[in-house]
Length: 59
Image (cartoon, one colour):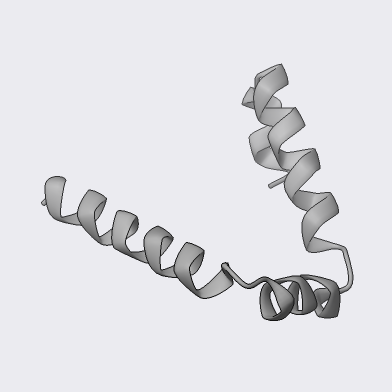
């Protein structure tokens, strides 16, 4: 990661900073949000289906 900062754009730096904040949070918080969300399973399945669709279209 350190080496990528040498070539990074401002948008890339913002994205890395945002991801770093999310990753450094308590993982139980994310787990709790996913567990308590009534639409969580549907959203995760939609995401998984989209990933598989993208994978198929690029191979």
